[in-house]
Length: 302
Ligand SMILES: [Fe+2]
Image (cartoon, rainbow, N blue to C red):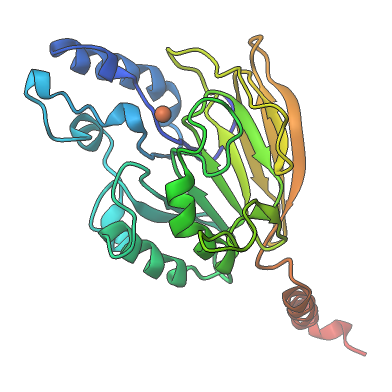
């Protein structure tokens, strides 16, 4: 709550009100709203929906999924020409943030598929050098909890994430922390080719940070051995911070707060996937030099 962040990227599963019945569902949403207001009142929270927001309760006569979430947490989806508040994009400072819905149709020709295809083309890395994607179900996860659940979305979208040089993908769902190396599995297909993820410098880093706290406890059983693609994993409560320094560099931390204090436990320097290429870096240096020369006062000319 007191992270000093300029924005909070929330990767789904808000109030867990779906554990309650009838009127208590709404009561739980109310108390949770008051709880997060201490932070949400002071900086934007970028919401994404998790499975605990689905609230499909046919036994109570509620058959419209996500109803509480959609009424209580509106998103600016129309600005990014999305047809549904569950998937949308916003620009915040120097980043273009795309929010996807793990629990809405996303296979070929669905509205979310069409929208993402176009939205990735709309990203202007000159204006927003950083491209961040949020989703609930992690695509790469070596925890026993929810293992392989993200595979269907991976098979549909991973190729695009690489083509459009997504910098980092944040997910939740698994109540533990895990960070991947830059890897991809786009050569896998059922008729041959590589059947495992391989190092890929053009791929995003995948971060599962579903360890913000919940009613279900931590997901402490990781698969053994740790897969090659998994750079760091730990089942502790915590949160991530991303400090964007400039067009090319950002500082990332995962902070364990299991014991009530923030302890930086995993950190690395994130290099921008678009501006990091040698060709674009040269362009950047040239433009920088031009701007420095043009800003020199005329009296300083020789
Ligand atoms: Fe979840």
